[in-house]
Length: 348
Image (tube, rainbow, N blue to C red):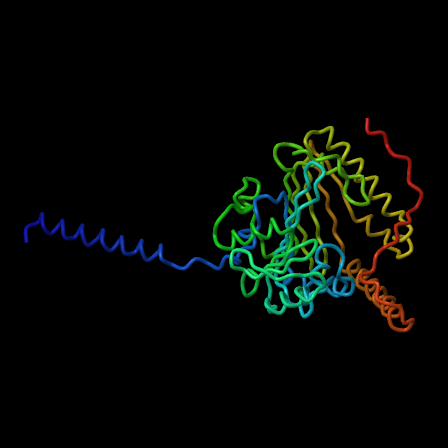
């Protein structure tokens, strides 16, 4: 064989083998769609809160949370027996977006765990007014305020039906997820963190949002452009949040409002009754330019005190529902009565 033909043969073999390797790589199976829950979070969401439940179960605060669990969006899951969201979940991702032009806020919740998804769907289906159906081939249960969908053997979602439809689309590897938005492109669900929070004001700025304050606070979310937060729960609790305002003037107003809220909560009658005023002394605020940093660190003794308080509240609830033979009123809620409001600081 001539040197020229030998070279051509080697080139052909080399490119052929390389092509085979590339084809083999391209044919590798994709990871399960629910490996990263962000892949299932619709791009319409302005923010998301990740809860590493598996890690949370190892924290000193887990018994307290288990005793008082049920407040907020997760209470929807608690009623879906035989599903115990604290024991049978490994990850929960809440997606949220403020409603524009007077519409309701949007929400979607993704839950991954070891539960039996068919049993969970069946439990929701037994609720009054529920109806079963399917969206893009996935089993769903429709209720008045939300729809539940079984996505995989280990993941379910619940929220507004329009968003559930988007999640079903993403589960079939179609559509745009929140990861494809620039502010979330590098947002990773760091499994070493117990809680992760990220939020970006809808674009364009304000997006028809009315002046809207967070519940029981003076915080106007319209003045916040971005939020990035993280919490690590173990024997101690470390919490850090960065709030970015539109400008330094808005940041100054936000800082004054936060300080006022902290003082107000410390003087709240219910907080004083429980002896929790010390908790708000652990919160530190610092402002630089249009960014406000919020930090809190609870020591092992602080966490132990919260655990003891949760035990006491649990016993009070048990006495009220068993010994006194009154109906269970659900998760413990604080009274709305507060100490007289302080004179507001001038925002001008």
